Image (cartoon, rainbow, N blue to C red; front, side):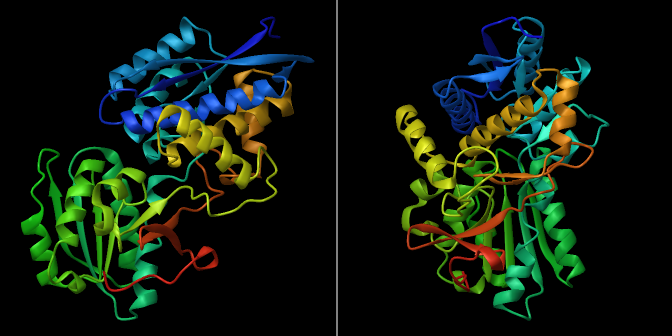
Length: 381
């Protein structure tokens, strides 16, 4: 039973370092969730309404920072609801601490499968795991070219996320008869991609997959888009292409690139089971973004959605007990503005699907899966 007049929701957020943009977006999304709930009178527990107070610390985009913050949030701040950081690596590090304390972690920002593969059970995933990000890319390539068979991969050689994304895409591609004709794993310090782009154009792949840090993806995309013979490349899939900074930095050169999107405001869930509709959520997130001088990207939407899922579990149980909340989350099969929510026994999200979007004429349009497609894919690249 809680005797406090407030509910503490804690998060380790990357406010500095390589994930600063996404970390700030996530914090803004979670903060906006708390403001929505507080404006409605708070969150009811034990028959009493409680205001939500967000407690956060900067992890500087470092695993040790995320672990230190998670320990502090649990042992010193005694947070009632614990939300994870952004990125697979930081979330995996945070779960090592939260699991040791038996504290449930609401994972809105870590797509890596290691988070669910270590016999951890006190974690609830909101977003689709990384190995599902690009499973539609080979099918999309075949959709526009039934003879497509040549795959090329360019990915950074550090971090679990790029490896997991590529593994998922290659598994599906190879099952469909694709061969990986070119695979380059580059160091994180490498930023010279012009020669690589020229080689890819000579190879004439049907599908190119690029996965790196955001700055890597922007630079490699610029090299590909600047090719005189860029039409030699069938589809160019770059993981960072759907986020705002990609379009901002590349301008018209961003057109044609395809990437995975966890959430697009144009995909409407008009009457969700939990939380606001897509239209209302987009309006609320837009206001949060404007106030924070940020773009409305998926990290903000994911954290916002995570808040409503946690809130639903608190409402269903009337409790803040972590074990009861974990059981309640495991029993849910609901929709939010973010899409369907359903987890398996490990806490891994299995209810929703990542969309593939293509930048066309300065806008993003969904091109896969077919039932969500808003426009035909433009091909070749």
